[in-house]
Image (cartoon, rainbow, N blue to C red; front, side, top):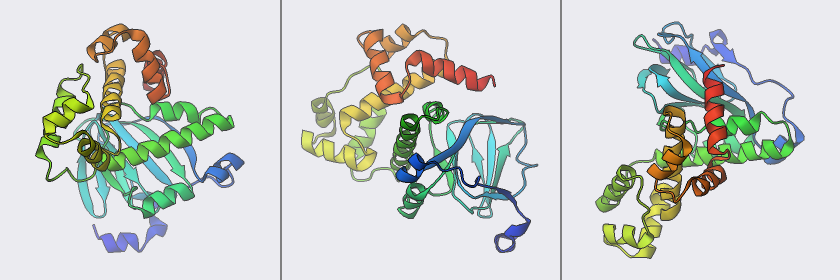
Length: 286
């Protein structure tokens, strides 16, 4: 397939248009608007029937089940559960189900000057990125559905935070700090443990202040917040992927009790554990 010919003949491509005149005053003031989002089921092997197209807006598609294939820039890429496809305006692409499986996604589409600045800074780049199996778009979809200005601002803030987090998570692996990589592996493998900064610094053979600088540089957050967020994202996986009750999940993650777990989960994820589970079930069945 001739990439140059395709790029020079966009008039023949399918186009996903951005609706005109939909940006409200709250979105203009913020500089970002979420157009829509939801859970979409594309049939098995739908990649083969997907036409080349481009979007007039940004699109983030989290494939949480199935198998996928992406055509981008003249090359093809496999997409596995836990991957996401980020598309920027005007980028020619096609993607869908592959290897006899459907492409099941949570998706968010958005546009605005804030998104354009993130693209210019290199935060938003078209392609496949690691997203994880936690359905992190569901809380944003929840806020976006409420037309109240406060909810729209909340949705914008959470989306912007997520985009920056994804950028930081998908940067090149750390170099010069092999102990740090081992520490991250330990944190993820022993999910019930609550690490102190002193514990982590000792593990890496650095001072507490050095550890904080390494964490900020390579993860974008401080050590204790990293551990906290990782636990809660793992909680999201358990809530949507298992039938364990909330008390069992809290215990597995090392929380003192269900109350403390639920309060912290809502503070970080935007929904209570029960709301998060029900929301995931609703999107999966509609």
